[in-house]
Image (cartoon, rainbow, N blue to C red; front, top):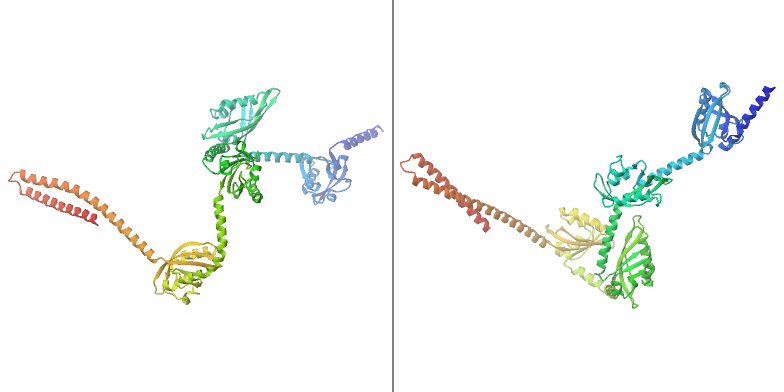
Length: 608
């Protein structure tokens, strides 16, 4: 009796524990077919089971009944526990259960042949989502630092340990992966003029009484490459009480920005000097404060006197003629808030005396490193005189419209009487109209020309480049000049210089006979060749004369020496000595004759 009571008490305690734990718990029967697990039936579940799985009323039901798409690996894992008795711990997702992740501990219970497995599990979906989000955040941070080209540093002053990533090393000219230390890597590679200030900034950030922020700017001199870089650092110090334990942050290379700022300052100075030497009204518009600074020409040209030579952007636009204002406002906004930087437009600008000046305004937008517009600098050119002349010209042109109609007859007479050949042709080269000058210039009658292919008259060597010009005209391009050769009816060729443009779907061209010009050009080229040849002969003659003079001087000495030998060597002397002297004298005289001929050649080359 007491045994039964003890068993019931034990079962009650088990049931109480079974129902009170937060983890899901169930006992399942793994179902096999041909020795392979294919499903499992739920024998027992606790209250937390439904909360962890989202499944209700599962006792007696199988997993395939409620989740037909349940992944096979779940059945394989539980089948392994049921057949081997080996418990398993694992984490796995169940896409069929709303993509939940479970942390599982499974072990066999009851007799092995029953294939019963107890499963203790927790829904860890939220934790997995957080882990994924954290991983993604870390990846995004790494990508962001890469895109922004930020280097990272971590300094621990207690033990002097300094950690840099490779981007930070690169900014100090240190190879990737090389060890770094505060003194030898950081301070040693700072510009000498910035070293003390940067060290002081570190000390200030590590001072618990300070802001604990590290925001210096300094220059580095690359350890290996010797390159000077402008670096901006941003960091924060962490403390244990009042003891600094870490200084972490990022560094970024601002060299390009600083060079751009220096260039901007130089440009601004040049602009200031130029503005004093021009009659253009130069303006400098600060887009952030909406203030515009003008030079003295605003007063000289337009009469406006402004306090401190400043106005607002609104004042400027108010001076634009009402009929032009909306257009100018739209065009300048399109440049400021678009991708372009250059702006040009024309409008009427109000003068202090009430009249309007016709102006050409040109401006350039300056943007910061993020591409946001910060300033716009430009100049207003007074073109009232030119515009007045243009208006007068338009009036004259309008008055000439009727005269143009009357002049059509004159144009027709020009077609008939012109000594230049004129034609209209299809884009394939078929001549559809030609003037009488064709007969005078090339001998062809109108009946022989109209309807003929223009290319059939071309010299074979001129077909290729003429075809390219015709293709350009077909695309709408005008040809200012093209020279080519056309066949005369007598079989000869004439050089024709053409001007052509498309119109009314045809090629319209005028040609002038430049054969005489081409012949003169050829004669000039031949004369230039002859001149160059004469210059060469002159140079050879000069060289020959110099050599002949030197050679003649040497021969004079030789002949004189031979003569002195004859006079001073007493007779009787051997016959062979006289023969030798005679042979040497004859050779020297022949050489003297050759020298005279060389001198004669130089004289001839000079006279050529």
